[in-house]
Image 1 (cartoon, one colour):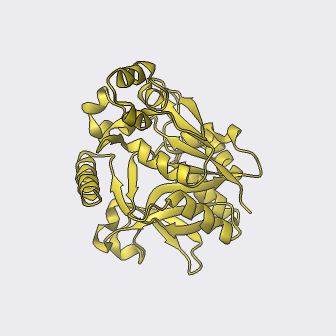
Image 2 (cartoon, one colour):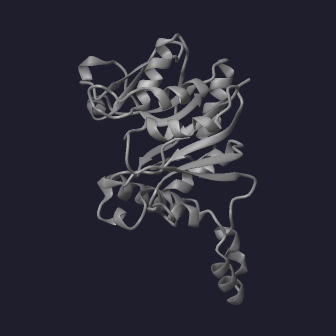
Length: 279
């Protein structure tokens, strides 16, 4: 049975696609409705029973830390003004330990860097979630994609898995496309393939469950020779080349990418309409 109690959420990027607003607001703290985008991910992993959350933050980061700690002055203000009923909205998370791992601004760049930084916190006998911090999976059933992924991997007697989201076949050249076999075992990721080069249409959602071996590969593998970046997909490919299995599933809910202006605006519209319809 796979042991999963930890989640890694990388949020150290500068969010250059969202400049100039991300000059002063960390990308993961951009609001979707009245909550920052990062909190949708946090609530999902909490629903999966996660007990430790590791935020991999940049050297300049302070907003994530402030959001998840108690604000004594705000609490006092709310009490003085008879607004005790909204104190739960700003209360620290319960039942979970929060850790902040600082990713240096200099040195290597790429998606495997934050994963490798957290390797020392992962035991040999456990797996941990790794979820990028600029996306939402809006579900109407109050379910958890993190829990679904953990259960899927456990049922397959594996220790690693990932989730994807389907995209229109004519748009697959915009994405990293997951190829899998008939048993839902990972084969490879094709970066922005031409539609005629694959029959698959599952976009890699950067929603992973990794075991210790993948964390170590992320820590030790060199930069990708063709792109010059340290890429977590290289760790995944090396892992499967060793004969290990990664189980592939499809994320539930509407996928909202808040990492670019168009996606962020759409996410706010979708969430606002969803909240209105559920009032």
